Length: 287
Image 1 (tube, rainbow, N blue to C red):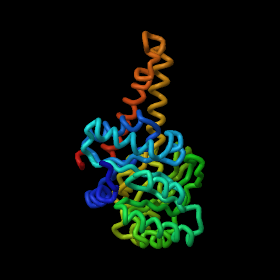
Image 2 (image 1 turned 120 degrees about the vertical axis):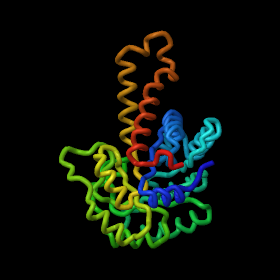
Image 3 (image 1 turned 90 degrees about the vertical axis):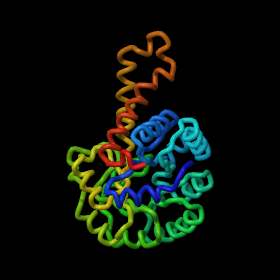
Image 4 (image 1 turned 135 degrees about the vertical axis):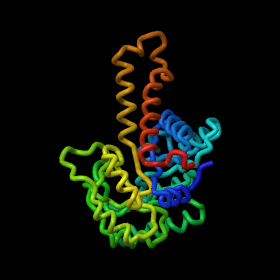
């Protein structure tokens, strides 16, 4: 059964570890991530961007697939199905489809509009027992057409949004989606500490977890980050394993072209990446 991310994040915040949000793109992704979490006995959040939801056929398809996997794979660890960087309309569709958590990304809107829409979603999510993530200060890089420069959030604006009753808050602290450029200056722990100081016990979220050095990840967790998003790293490891399989001619041996064989190395690579992150985030054996 899908659960809200609220309880797992409160436990993570208090236990000084973070729960990984791993974005899914298809059945292979979902299955590999769920198996890795189960084997590591770790809670997990499956992230779905609006683009990925559309790619998979729609939000009802995603819910049906994930709920089927939970049953058929005997997944017993807590699993949350979460809309990543949702528009207001996208959030309403995912609530209706049966997601257990949503993120409303109003970071590009004027703060008044961000507050107004977040307030409405807080009420709906409370009624349905869902968790709600809000964002202040755009996360840099590009994800499904959403582009940000990696600016740092205004801690006062973070407080305004946190006070509305959201479950968790993503504050831009110089983090970006995708690969980090060579001239990246690192995370702004000064901003993170200021946000933490004003938002109190609110679990904080770090987007763009791919490529942030391990010591920075650990420091962010010590400063109140309870959820870390990983997407690009799984894509890169899947692509590299698939490339190796094809370039070594394995797809031409016997029935090596069968998708069940062709996609297996990539799936194993995703599992390995997820397990590595679960270790780093400290969520192993926390289910």
